[in-house]
Image (cartoon, rainbow, N blue to C red; front, side, top):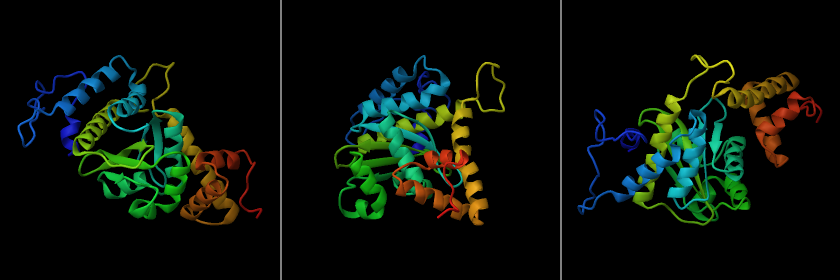
Length: 268
């Protein structure tokens, strides 16, 4: 479970930490958990010397290195829409924005269920039918499978680590264990990052400032749409998302147009 992954810290020996991992795990057949050991080593090397605000992006890159996927992104839970924090590539970032725009996809399901969601084949069958619009858009973007793993604890899901694959297929138990390990370290890294209320050098911005600015644009646009149409926030957000989908754009791009008065919703 995720609790096991959370105790792994890249720069610490988990066997020396109070309540930490006592050492290499053995499977039912007595084999050492070599995948977990290797993953912890790769994670440690991947984040060593990296600035705190860059750790989430680096962990996304590490996930791609460790697992049979072509991209990874991390998003935080928020009212209305998840907030994309970082990604391994522009392609992965686009797929995260696509889920946020549609309000649909494995990321959304994880936020609702608090457990890993493995969409092993978006081209056909149950997965394609569960998220039909997202599945169509994702396959057009070259993705055939998506694996979403919750961040946080068993009790509270604070976000998701989303993994993208260009061919159908699932994750083995060991690969899922590694994905959970990365998600656990991601959770610890996010908890350790400084917030805006904490003291920071004057020449540095809080780690969430730029991210919050983009997210605030969406809700500023929602407020403007509410005023234009005389509707509530949920309806305004739905209209924003629908407009973005119809234009093949993202909710953030449409929000920028609304704020700049290039787009109005009371003119059609």
